[in-house]
Amino acid sequence: AQSVTQPDIHITVSEGASLELRCNYSYGATPYLFWYVQSPGQGLQLLLKYFSGDTLVQGIKGFEAEFKRSQSSFNLRKPSVHWSDAAEYFCAVVISGNTGKLIFGQGTTLQVKP
Amino acid sequence: DAGVTQSPTHLIKTRGQHVTLRCSPISGHKSVSWYQQVLGQGPQFIFQYYEKEERGRGNFPDRFSARQFPNYSSELNVNALLLGDSALYLCASSPRVRTGAFGNTIYFGEGSWLTVV
Image 1 (tube, each protein chain N blue to C red):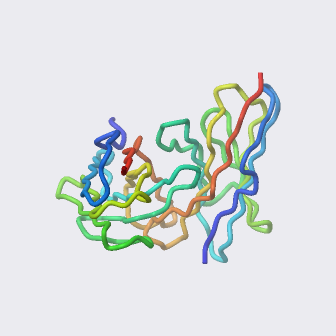
Image 2: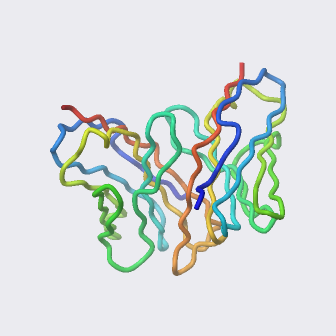
Image 3: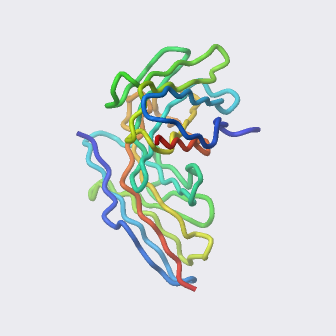
């Protein structure tokens, strides 16, 4: 069965430090990949997406992610974290040809230290 | 343009009752999906509707049902509420029903918080 794994449940970084959130998926065919962010009590905001082409994709708020087929990974990165980035981050995959159903990881909670 | 809008934002129900949640998709989006997010977990897919027809169903009991109207808005209904149904219910819309070569970006609303007591 298709699945998405976010190995880190909770990450704490200092403001201004770099960030990498990990995401691994299991599926043999071409995946379509998303990163969403959720602030407390809020819905999901799309950060970035990968459908095809350049494997390094840029998103909003200074985030980027790199698709690595050989590692089945789609890690999210940011060079310098701001206190406002503290939130829950979800990686999700849509299987090509599916009905558009998203499969989500468990999420990673990001805490930012001053 | 307005994003995905959901109502109500918060509600409290008693076990055994019924609840109806509503969703209006982004203008021009014909596909609506529903997700359940239990505290501390990622969202779980419940339904997808496109052109008023069910196009996908997740692993949820028959107490959960939905429908889509001609204007593409949607309702999620849950009967015989259980304590375990307490969750954030998210609605998402997208332009198309299938993910093809050009992708199919899925946008979420703010959700409806359901508490069952």
